[in-house]
Image (cartoon, rainbow, N blue to C red; front, top):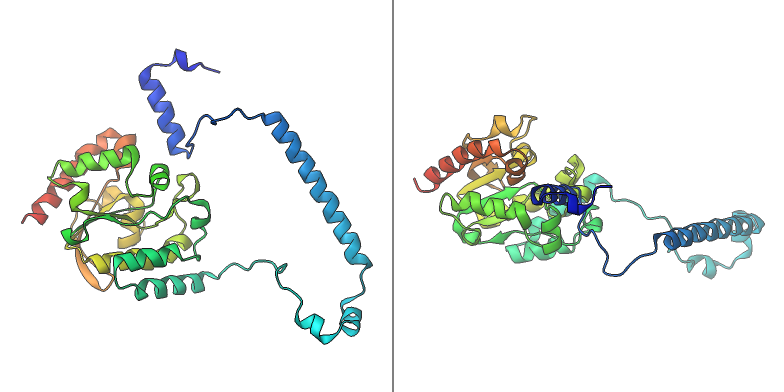
Length: 292
């Protein structure tokens, strides 16, 4: 194993960035952890669980058949039997999408929409995410910037475009005279997928009513989309961001039509700095349009 003392500052920064992109958020615990004892306890717990399961099967085998039990048990007992042990049933995709659409359309303000999303349980991503990452900034600015999903820093801080990717975005828009405070920042998917993986088509469909309702409520005049996933989500098709970027489109979304431009995501600029020149061309086009 290579010691940290043998690495240069640049190599250390690259290593930390790699772990951050992979979803690692802490390298050290606050208190020392005995992993060997933890493993032994885990094995013992599994053994106990198997023994309990065997006892449970034996007990079930010794019980009378359902027909016999229904004959012997009084009607009142059967009616009051708890259903708590019934297996959880996943919500069908169509139902989850319909519930998301109803929750979104019922919101009459961004504050109401945020409350509706916090209470929405139809997307499994919320079970692994720390925070709902909702839109932030100035809804009255007429400018909205949308990314694909929260990353680790966003999920930790509960705000869109946090951490080093947020710093990159801040520098990108500062070059055309914008700040985080005078635009509205959001993401297609408001919960971070595990390991920063790309959201599935099902997850995107479930979250679609929420981002479309954010756009409808904010009524931006200009929309900037960041990255492959976001551009494909709104434009459709399988073209890459290099094929979709730099071209203005009139996008019908959320019951309104918005002048929309796609460009590269800050992550694209961090991993391949050569992309900065393409993003800068797009940002200059965006600046010319919003000030035109």
